[in-house]
Length: 89
Image 1: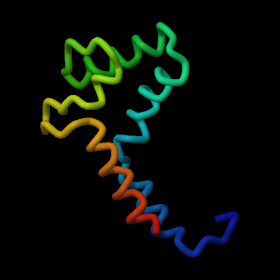
Image 2: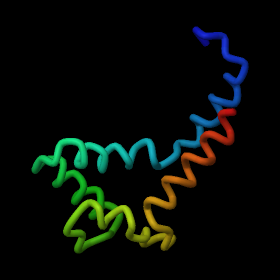
Image 3: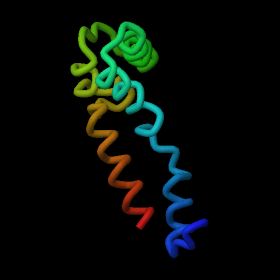
């Protein structure tokens, strides 16, 4: 609103999607940025919450399919980003 954008209603709609990427990608991003034990454990907890076990490396998690849909996590995130920008513009 501060910038008087003309697409504010579209941007608001895009934000209302509650796309999974905004919550999920940051967990993996923190691991790749910091490579610390606590960030590794956060990725492991994220995987367990999804029902995915046996993930040795976070790199392997993002190419695994979600148990509920079979869609690879990275593909779901990319679809979320595409939908977000389609609605926001």
